[in-house]
Length: 233
Image 1 (tube, rainbow, N blue to C red):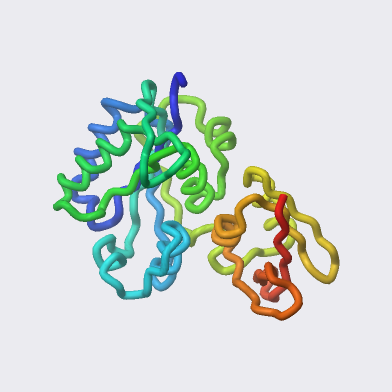
Image 2: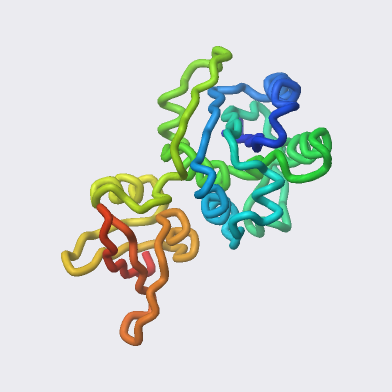
């Protein structure tokens, strides 16, 4: 593999060392773009829950540690990734370079979790969808040239955090997910996917408990809840 798309996140409370971390990343990686992203503070914990796939309550230690202000997202290529087996991600090769640097930056910022990084290509793709609503392909097409030093500021919540504007917006997002397909069946939306848990998290679906349909969810579209049935692709 010639290069691997990589992301790093410096949460608000780690940004005092942002220049040092960015300079170190720039010395090892080919930065495509840097973003300053501000989520609404009252949605920060819910967004972290979707990002990490675990319940992170509002006001908890993790939220306080990160800070709820603007954070920095750095997107770039590792020109010489070192792919290794990773027990945290069985069956997926992770980039030893990114894991090494992530842990180093965490030590620089006090030994906590003030820096996040994508360990592998799947995590990078997921993180970019959550934070920018863009696939890896879209990122590569949009930011072809090396970073010019300018930071793009974005003030918006995580994609889909308050539901979806309309069905078209949801459909366009689903097209960016691997092995996932959507069909509007009038009475309900049908989604075929290989991973129910990941798809429901990416689309911000809520589980519905019914006696008749085991894999039924609901999603907010245009301010109204619509039923979704998930099937195996």
